[in-house]
Length: 129
Image (tube, rainbow, N blue to C red; front, side, top):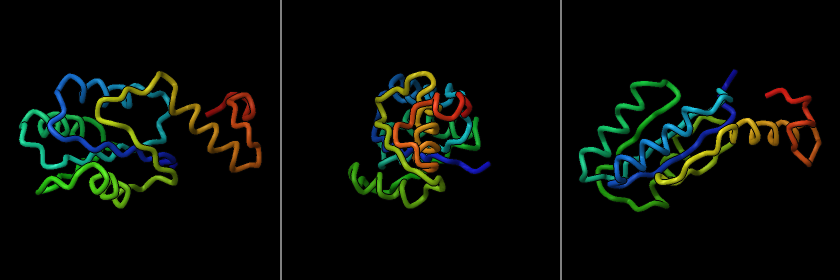
């Protein structure tokens, strides 16, 4: 199956602990139909680049782009959107954390809307992701 949801994260000199916590929260999702497009907005801190490279090497669903100059969050996110392959796009700040099971609920809502059920509750699809 393809990637239903592309998460776009822009990072610029993000503290390593925050960035790892953010990326770990995506990797911990038990709904597998996602990709993560990280855009390093010309971080001067080599730790930011190293963390992003480490996570991209760990999982093929994670891709990293690097801006040669600082473009700011809006242009960086737009660059990530252009590179995204998912049918739906979501934004995740570099210091945010996804709750356990969050992507399951997003996928259920997407599926529910696609079949005409506007409530999008997981029960609407029999609890299947």
